Length: 268
Image (cartoon, rainbow, N blue to C red; front, side, top):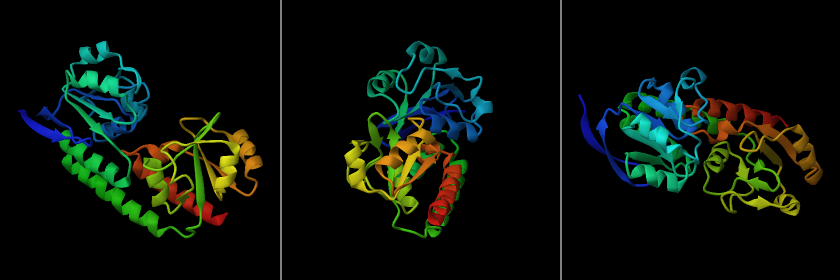
């Protein structure tokens, strides 16, 4: 039996849909993983080509394009009764077009609190309230453990996400929030969300550590050598970008990864 309910997303938009939703399209990799980890294998009928986890569950799903380029005819053929999107990862024009025909719930993740709020709200949206509450409680406990594990609060981190030109993570981003949760000082915290940096800018920021993210730019050891020449006193580390930026159930792995990273940094 289904009944119609109203829900408010993280952009304060209200949508109405039949509950529980039976045909869900997820346009965000981390949120796809969350839904499938909750066992919604039959309900999730469409995903993006970047939705790669959990591997066993995404293999047979219809791919509706990328996160910023949708194949609308494939979406129409799937007849979704709910589409779950994200403000930053998806493109506004595409979302607005979909919202004319379907209930589209949009997340907006900037802080740790936003991620917990998203988990609880998506749990309510998909009638998985108990699983959402359990996950949120586990994550809050892990976050407290992570904060208790901090030792050195003088770690000044430059977190790079792109090369040619160099781009870093600045204020009002989820990665900045995770760096803060780890006790790291983001040297770009007073700059734009994703500042472009010249060599002299990087030197002036004077980071104790430079984190080279595995995504979206695939940094490798050779790039570390290039940066070491710019900042000879900095410690260069390659880090797993998924562990800093995926804000669904992957956060359990992410917090464990960050705990190990804190221990590594404190030893150096």
